[in-house]
Amino acid sequence: MSLSRPPAPIYHASRTAWRDGRLSAGERSIPEETAVALTYNRVTHAVMMATPSDLEDFAIGFSLSEGIIADPGEVESLEIVPSKDGLELRMWIAEPRGGAFADRRRYLAGPTGCGLCGIESLEQAMRKPPHVKSDLRVSVETIRDALAALPAAQTFNQQTRAIHAAGFWEHGRGLVASREDVGRHNALDKLAGALARIGISAARGIVLLTSRVSVELVQKAAVMGAPVIVAVSAPTALAVRTAEAAGITLAAIAREDGFELFAHPQRIDAPVIEHVA
Image 1: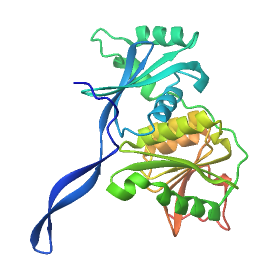
Image 2: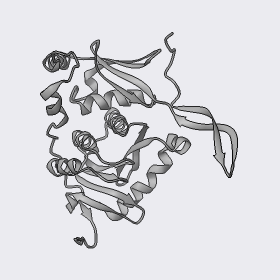
Image 3: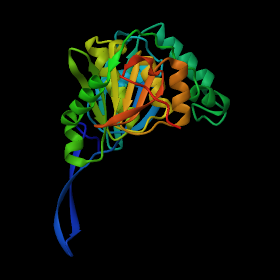
């Protein structure tokens, strides 16, 4: 039987807890995880496991970061279709993008029918990011303020302690938007979609991440045009090299007492930058 609507993003699970030497029954709020198919002009492009919230933002942000569209207006229609196995984000994209998408799918379809196969998959995964040019400068205090603002916006994580967030901070405006998901990539796609749908450029602010920084997150931030990434966890080596190539300032392991700069530190106004071996 098909679902009539998407499931709630938070599920209240019965559980038995072992605490203080005894068992007790109760409930815990945990995040929902749902299979979400992104389809374009009746063709399925990807299936992601995601939190069923802010789905319109997810559809637009994913489409932008994957280069399927260049502007939200190229999506002529977007329908959320629940089924017994998950959700379909059913999009129709206008020409010439629709034709280009169909040609891309035909080119990438390998003999096994997997959609993204062999060397094409490797080239897509290792695609060169756009180069971000920006004269933005950010103070240490701004980074601290931005990080301090994000937890209050993580409403799902406050309930579950199991959900990633991506936020966008702009000087003079504060935390403009934030989105949450069980997948760190999905959270950033949702943020990209939210900013695009309200017409806010990421070029004048900071992308905040509650996760480690993998290469895909840097690639997505580059497509957004974000000049600064601040993350609470460490980056991978490939993420650092990609940030360097993309012209993105990468600050990670960010805490109340400071952070570490891994790429393009010149955008950060700090009293002294010392090299520590």
